[in-house]
Length: 380
Image 1 (cartoon, rainbow, N blue to C red):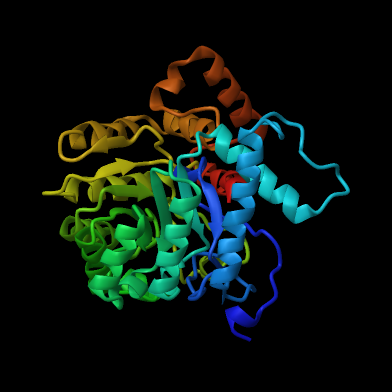
Image 2: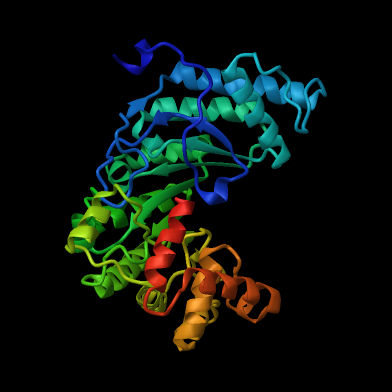
């Protein structure tokens, strides 16, 4: 059955968006992931990829536009009270809540879901973008995830048309620029494809956000992972480099490899050393580096290259210079959500709370990584 033949299933929203799109209106263009083989990702495992029909996506936009108009006219509410009673149509409530939350966030950005919106026909994507801009003239940013392999195969003219229609930013999961790592985790793209895709996005005039995953190479490929990834990004010069540290909840293929001993996951100190090597190897680019995810050990790494490079690497050097007991305390404080910066170790109240967790769980420098691995699974 083609997307055009499928019945409309109501207003839809997918399971994920980047943290930077927390205030965006979510419009679902595709369902799940067309690749869905990466050994480090379990988000879409067991789910079938499908494209939504153009008519259904446009209908979703019209539906949420209807509720945005009602809210703006004062017929709904921007508070906690729904426009409908609990027995009303669920899809209508989802659309209402999406409209309300978007307006509360300022109503300025839209994110196209799910994992690879650019896989649809360029004409359809352009039509969706035009419809969004017509419905919401005040939109300042429209963004989407995309796979490097998809963009690498696209015509430059199509990318330029999509940019002109209003797609401002693309998020790409680089994960690694090392071919050995990419092949091992079944990423479905190599270094050359990542570079080609990234450069094509930039050439089309869209902002580019690339994601690097510290730890993905494991202990064996750590150095190559750091240096080759930095080299890849140096060749692209993306607008953003976002850090997403590897985490392995049960059930992932890579977690099974870890259990069997064929993949050696690094602890926080080793991963910090890898991240230091990576950041030091970034050169000749003007990207903004952001550590905007709870999985990352260092939230305070945030700056624009090259001016802020030394300040960012200084954070990691400072952690590595701590004695093991202090490193352990920071790890627990960070993984429990108490700490956001290294200086939080000096806050008497926060320090006492972290120390209580250390004592309660009998944390030592020898077992802290195993305990932290369990703690961060709550955030996946």
